[in-house]
Length: 370
Image (cartoon, rainbow, N blue to C red; front, side):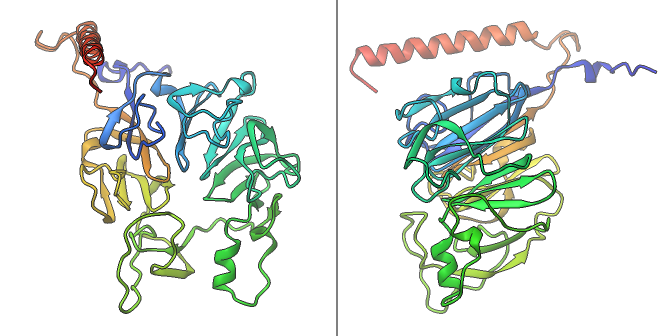
């Protein structure tokens, strides 16, 4: 029997894409380079309801649509946007070199990007200084996505860290490449031979287990669990994601505090999660990437209040910025008591507001202002 939607179900879902946090390279896709402390809605560069994946890197961001298109923006010094050049991009822009090649997923590292196509092939672009592109004899950087030929099995998921990347295959095998974790591994296991996957510049087999563990730095609560600090330790001023003289938890431990999460994304020192439709954030917040309107560290996961009336669908973190795809509350029915504005009227007011804003901006420019 065909299911006929009720009036409330017939109302189209209002889905919008938001961005906030660090924006020095235009990684929020808002057309400027100023940090944003509260979630701000992006202009419609694509239909938000069709967004499949969102993620961010050191200073760049990426969005994949249901149709398999890839949009990118932000820092592009090493060609990590895959656009064929090295100029920064302030608005989300389609990656034209991948037209005709539908994309399933994208993962952004610090200065590189890993791309998974719908047929299970993995591509990479950006810096290859640490072998993070998975092409051992390739150039130091690549400005156009290239295939990682050594991944011969069909890949179903990819991930990227600071200077390393991972891929999971349909058979359940996980591969890692990039030497970015080698130095921390040597500090944790002095005098011992490191596992090959920590020093490989080409895909190297890691594990077949599906458990999730966290370990490493915890000075901003980024592990999602309590870690006792060293005696006499004092926080340093946040200066670089590479600084390491801070409390660490070297032994991996399973994470329980985010039970029920349907989405989790990790930045440099902050994280986002979707739990029960609510978007949570915690960790480093110097650029406002936790979205609470402040720049103070958030020590434990808490809901992003500015998005409390919306249902979180997808989240993505860059090093110091955040993105979230949310479903907004349904609009009141236009004929309810005859006092609700029609969608046409709402759209007209929004357009008039944009025109006024554009005119004001033009006036400021003519007067020499910013």
